[in-house]
Each structure stands twice: as C-alpha cells, then as structure tokens.
Image 1 (cartoon, rainbow, N blue to C red):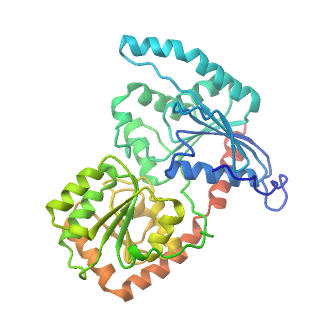
Image 2: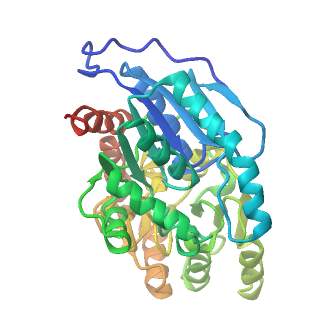
Length: 396
C-alpha cells in the first residue's frame, strides 16, 4: 500500500527538530511489501526522521519482483540488485555478468541522492554493497544489527564466509554501531570481536488503530511471528498440551512459515483437536485485535533479538509471557510487567500459562503495568536516538 506523504517536515532546529539536517540513506535488508520487524522498524524510522527535518531515502534488496523505485509514505524507496559471488563456476559466471549492472544501479542511487550518511539496517547483501559504496565515497557509515547474526533460521552467518567477512569489515569501518538490544551487541562481541556499540531499541506506534475484538481469540493463549524453528512455537505447543487450563482454552498462533506442517503434525500427536488454531499471516490490525482479545500473549523464542511482539501486546493491553533467552528478558521485569520463563522448560512454561489464564488479578496487574511500560518505546524516541548518532558520530 502506497500512502500519501505525511505532513511537511519541520525545519531543522524548530519545534524540536534537529540541530543539523542530514541526508540519510537507510539501507535495509528487506522492506515493504514484505512483513517483519526490520521492515516495520525501517519504515517507521524513515517517517520519523523525515518529520524531524531530515532528507531520507530507503535502499533495499531487489528480490526479482521488479519493484524499481516507489514512493511509500512520502519516502523514495529503491529496490536494488545485490548479486553475490559463489563457489561454483556457473554461479560465479552469473555473478560476473550481473555485477556491473548492480554496481551501476547502486552508483545511480548514490549520485541521485548524495547521502551524508549510509545507515545499514540488518546486515546482509545490502550491507556488503553499502560498505563498499561508503569506502569508495568516504561517506559516514552507521550499522544497526537486529539479531541477524543469530536469529536467522537459514544460518546465513554460519554458512557464508563472505557475509561474515563483510560484517567484520563493516564493524571495523563504521562510525557508529547500534543494536536493538544488549544481547545483539553481546553477539557482535562474541562472534566478531566488536567491542562497544549502543543499544537503540525498537518502538511502537502508541496510537494503535481502533479494532474490533477477535471473538475467536477471546480468552485464548496467543502467539504470533514467522513459523520458524527459532521462534519456538513447538515449545509453546508442548507446554500448552500439559498445562492445566480451563476446558475450551485455545492456542492461537498467527503467522506463516516453514514449520506449519510440523506444528500441525505435533498437535495431532498431542490430541489437541481444535484447541490449536493456526491463522496464517495476519495484518497489523488483525494482530492487534487478537492481542486485545487474548488472555495472554506468549513469546516462546529459543532466542530473540528484541521482541517487538512484547511492545504490541503491551499496547493492546495484553499480559505477556516471554522467553528468558535474549532481548525480551531485558524488556520485561519478571513478575512486574510480565513473566519471564525458559520456553525449553515445558513445565515452567505450563505453570506460567496456568497463572496467567486462571489468576485474573495477576493478569490484570501485569496488563496495567505493560500499558505504562510501553510509553517509553515510541518511534519518535528511536529516531531521536539515531539522530544523535548522526550529530555526534561524524564530528571530525
């Protein structure tokens, strides 16, 4: 959906605008129309930076869909080719044939916009091209990691020496490095030897659209995300099966992905019948409706970089149970703004489900605490922190 541009940006230095305007190229691993946390992060940040008086474009990976150049939310988005070399002779020849056109496309994008900063969001092929472009043009570089080094089911960083080497070079050459959580920066230290960095979290739009409550989710246990191994929905399924919950309590999981068939098979083995409902991919309004109707929202990931679902659940007024592995454990204070549980401990997760579903007083207390906690996580605050990186990170 291409929407009209937002209100005209504020002049620098006025009405809380920046002291210095920047020309920011947000170089994202993925973008609309594809769903996901990185896509949402970059789209929201682009709008906020523009509203604060900066010139902003988005450069993202062309997946062969021929999207070209579009205007989305008033921001120019270029879908750029990112061919990479490979070991086989045939793949190497394809790269040699494709690279000149890709290099020209990236150079045209740079020439047409003349950015004062290249900001890589989630390092992948996009990062390799941005680093090369930044070194050739001596343009300041910001690298923001979203947990792609460990939260990818395809294990790109384990399998591709090129991507690993490119990340090390990016971390060495970047003027500023940020991560969406401390666990992300810790992984950059442990796997790539990078010390330092700054945590800039995700945000959420506090003014969520008004939604009709999803009657099919009323009183249910709800989870949402890509149906992939790392997200741990199979762990939630095991805990749900042994939890002592009121009869009729359903487990509703939203999202699409590779493990759907295995979840359905395991549900049959556990004789859950119609107690499990896999909705398929959900739009943002549908997610909000399901959360607002649910008894509890669960983030059962084996490892999670941040946990945008937590912010969305807090905003919707849903109590949360989150994984102890990764970013959500830093967001949620156990027993105060939610429950923090090791999802690989089926009994512990089952007890947490029982508490949330059966103890209404506890659920209501955590629900209200979440509504307060989410106010600290606005996109405006995220953009302001990036802006401070741009202002201070490039001083000669």
